Image (cartoon, rainbow, N blue to C red; front, side):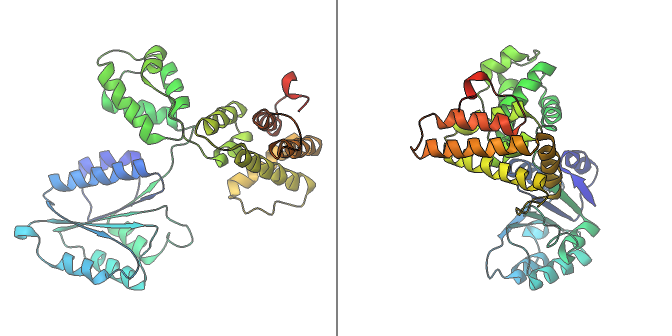
Length: 334
């Protein structure tokens, strides 16, 4: 069966399956899901825990032998497999399928892995074997649209009374960093017990814990100009060099140009990203994209010392131009 991360707690309160696969690239949620399964396993009497970290030349028969041996004092046993980026080879897949074909009642299998690849993993024998008798939990990053609801649910879980404007502010401050956001909610529960939390309390307690990549910046150009500027500020606060920022923005401008000119982008883009980029490029139009590329060339000259000016201001202007926003007068002469 397939489960979402937010469904796992309720599921575990009702039943415990023979096997769980928790997969994704968001470490905080992955860790929390694995902890929930471990806690429920202990409650159900799986007190003996054996952990295997899969690496090159891993001996899969160790897992099989451990599953077939008696647990400590004859008790129930939790077998934990940490795959990371690795995947079971032919032998490993056969071992897992054998274990899960008729899972012993005294064995619980917990597998953690990086994000499942649709071509390599989904539909593979070992994933299908877990899905048949257990649960597959795909972990997805909490994007900007889901974050407010996630904050509300977590506050409710922690007994924190938070107002809607405070949720909005906390979302902006912690976007891209679920661990820091969860820690801030725990801190709010300690600092302001049994009282409504508004914007003032958030400002007293919370630092700006956003964490973004330059690709978050380019993704925001076609979706939310204000968010793009917040991400730009966050990247600079984290010490991202203006050269890296310019590289990402110029690359996006060339992608837009390729779509509008009818040649199509040479970059391999996810389908949704390609659709959004093409639509946004058409809205911008070739003249605006050409002006953005010319501005990118001037910023590059500034960075290399060939032209006077401020590279940070140039990248800010380029962000606004690629987002389809009018430039303030201060940026017009860049």
